Image (cartoon, rainbow, N blue to C red; front, side, top):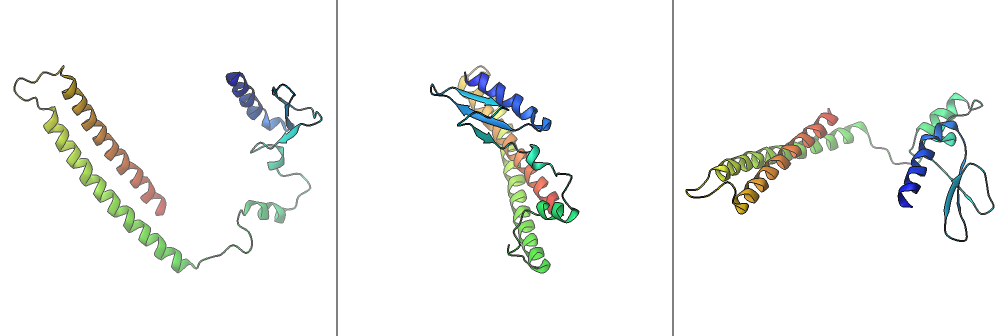
Length: 158
């Protein structure tokens, strides 16, 4: 039932460009029906990117610009100097974070190289050895992913 509802909802989302209104109707038994025909008691579903999101032909250029601005008119604004200082602080925090993550990644790689060396008499099929190496590899991978994510954030600031 859940799978069929999901598939139906997926079809409805894909059909949104057809500009049909979608209604959700729940009957006495609790069965949910999605339809483009209104039934008494049905509720209209607003689909992002649906027909109400498309500009109508009668709108002027100024009303299109106003709807593209998500901030209300009385939304607090800050001056460019303040924004630059905030961006500089954020850049420094991210730089500190990336330096720490690079240091942690280097330490995790060092621990991994030590952990991969077998002690005399230790077998590679030993479960605790395998778990330890797996954990060390995951740690290295996590630190490297963090470095990439922080680099992406830094690139967005420039």
